[in-house]
Image (cartoon, rainbow, N blue to C red):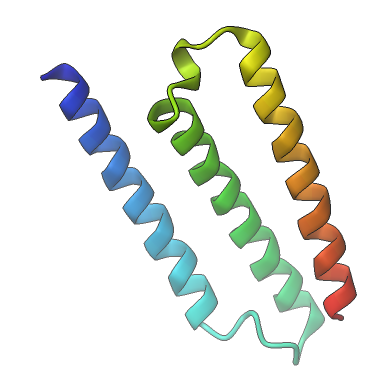
Length: 93
């Protein structure tokens, strides 16, 4: 029963983060009119995505209970994904 409460609480946190991310996207900050607001929205969305990915990997993929080597492998992949996302953002503008 304890795991059920933990996973339910994490689900609520993920839902709140996803809602916040959608609100940032719907405010129009992502439009290309003003580069400063675009990069602010990009930073907010990237930070929220990082937090959500960390929650999913830690609890739903059970990395919290895995050996550290598996966690480091995941962090390496996350770093590569972050680098590719940043490079893609620069190619848009």
